[in-house]
Each structure stands twice: as C-alpha cells, then as structure tokens.
Length: 275
Image (tube, rainbow, N blue to C red; front, top):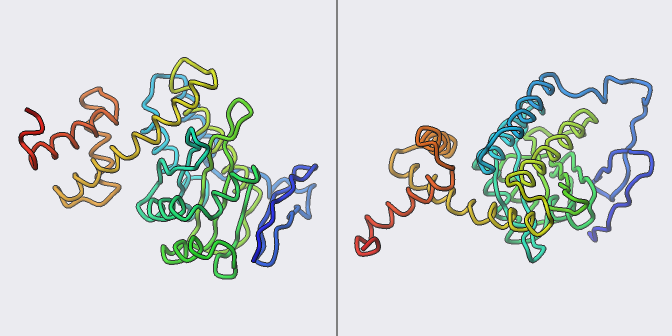
C-alpha cells in the first residue's frame, strides 16, 4: 500500500496509524483526565534524569539508561534511538535490549519503518498491531520476528530542527493510550536534551558534531559489548553492565573504556598492531 504523510492536527490530537490508512485518533473523553495522566512512577523517572542533566555525564551511558527506563513508564515496552547524520540520514545509536538493536539496524539498512516515517513527516506515528499492517513489509516482518506487535515512533527536536526519532515497541498489540504517548514524548525530550547539552556548545554546528560523535561511538561500544559477551559468556545486558561498571570504577568515559577493550582485543589477534 502507498503510505501518505500525516497532517499535524490543530487541536493536539494523537497522530495515529491504522492498518487501512493514516488517520487522526482523538480522545472521546476530553473531560476525563484519567487517560491523559502519566503512568505511575513517571515523576521519579523524569526527576532522576533531570538531575542527571544538571551534572557532568556520559552521553552514551545516559541515553542507554534512559531507554532502559522506558519499561518503568510503559508496560511491556522496549525502545531504541536513531539520530540524523550530517547527511540527513538516520543511523541507529542505542537500544534497551538486543532484540531492538536488531530491529533498528535492519530498519537502517532498508530505510523504511515507523522511525523513518516519523522522521520524514515530522509527526508521531503509532501502529497498534503490526500483524494487520501492510506497509513497510521488510521492517514489519523483522518486528514480528522479534516478538513485537505495536510500535510508536516519536520525533526528537533541538533548536527547531529534527535530530532523530525514538521508537518504542510493545510485545502486546493494542492501541497506544494518551498516557503512553505523553510518556514517550517526554522521554524523547529528555533524550534530545541529553544530546544537545553533552557539551557547553549549543550552536547548531556543535549539535551536528555531537550527533556524529554519538553515531561513531555506538560502533565502538557495540564491538566492546560483543567482545565481553564472547569472552565471559554474557548476554547483551550483562555485557553493557560490566562495561558501565568499568567506566565508573576507572572514572573514564564509557566510549573510552570501550575503545580500550576493542584495541586490546585487536592487539591479541595482531601483536604487531600496537608496535
């Protein structure tokens, strides 16, 4: 089916995707606050990251922790972040679990899916059941193969520009509530702030540089995780935890520790490399 762009609603409604067409889904009970309340525990999660942004932090580690916190806000959820490169293409940066890593890398290769549609149209995109969705066939199949059924794509902005998208996945199908959408949008805002304020420079040139650094560092961190997984028989989450603990113990940035692990592994394979 041909996918056509969404129009942004004037009255703040949820931009919503149905299997047959793009449409706008509005709440039928605007006088009922229950559907718009943030999930329980949201204030604690957002307060934690608001305080973190006011202190020196490692951007990559903070984004990873933020994504891992999504399941505290949205039941049965996992998530990933894709950022715009200097050329305007989307590239995968971080995910809360290995299954989402595989989905987002595949989405990057085929350049289709909820993330790309949200970025191209600069609108929130929600699909409540991928089993009945006939757009983006390659991406759709990869999502279903990973055991996910519902997806939410939320654009991220800084200085009025699109800088990327957060994708949130659920294994259970069903409509996305207004509370879930609000939590997802707040998470996207925190992620954008973490990227923008990772240095003292806030000009747009520096922002583009930060995005490029985030994309470059994801490869090194991913390689380091793979080395730890193979060497110690760890899963992806345990490998990242070990990487983070080494960073904290040495009081060095996460990507520096990752680079050290990768360089040491390469030197074992090729001793002349470090000569």
